Each structure stands twice: as C-alpha cells, then as structure tokens.
Amino acid sequence: PYVIVCNHQASLDLMGMAEVIPERCVPIAKRELLFLGTVGWACWLCGIIFIDRHRRDAAIDVISQTARTMWREKVR
Image (cartoon, rainbow, N blue to C red; front, side, top):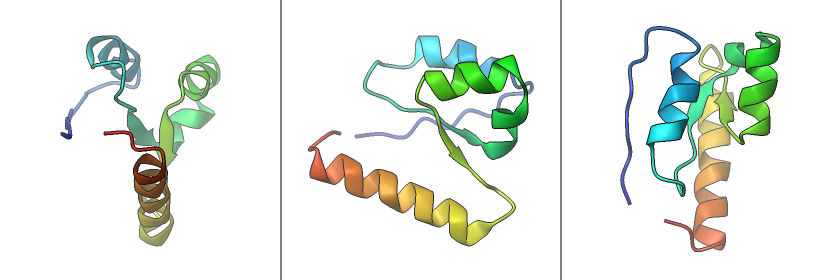
C-alpha cells in the first residue's frame, strides 16, 4: 500500500491525475470541488472521496470510514 500526495495548482488538475494514478487508487479531494458545477459532478461520478478541510473532525471521520472499508473489503 502507498499514498500519493499531489499538490496540484488548479481544480482541473485532479481529473488529469486520476488518469495517471493506478486503477486501484481512489483520489481524495477537498469538498469545495464538489460545488464547481460540471467539475464537481465529474469528480463525484468518478468516485472521488471528498473531505471538508475546514472541519477537522469530519475529515478524520471520512478518512477513517474509507480505511475501514478498505480493511473490510481487503483492498490495498
């Protein structure tokens, strides 16, 4: 298992990165992208996990739920 950390400069960079990373990886993006119209819909349909960076507890909960799902489904 590994973590890829990307410091992208624009919202559209995330979709390009999603094409490059391995298929089993799931990108995590800031929740603000969800509200960018077509970009938000495309990200949501691609299965991107959104975290709220302004609410630390909520972000930790989302990442913890993702980790539990990965553990339960034996996904690396």
